[in-house]
Image (cartoon, one colour):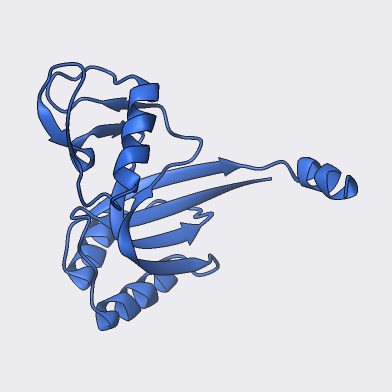
Length: 162
């Protein structure tokens, strides 16, 4: 079994729309994704919003070099301790100072305190629909297409061992 999740986050990691905007966004998305589960969540801290199995690489925004995944993982772990509030660091490829939010992720990933998720969408948002949702939320949105693979047989097998 697998799931695809359309994730929409503000381009500014700290932005959280007001509750009326969140309700209106949910209603708007329900008119597009009639039979899909829609989840809207806010958190106290900035979170990494991943793309699941679609994750390919992290790229330097300055020199466009692919970053070493071990370095990225260690940097993410260190920055996670401060809830990404102290997000500046020196890049190993070109010695430029950057923030974790500015790295380029292939496929899209991001950081946010607010996320909208549509479970297993059967269509993509059109540019017009995305623009309308941005108007409702009052901010630009980043689109993240996440894919998660899960084998039910492994869960069943694990349950049998206990």
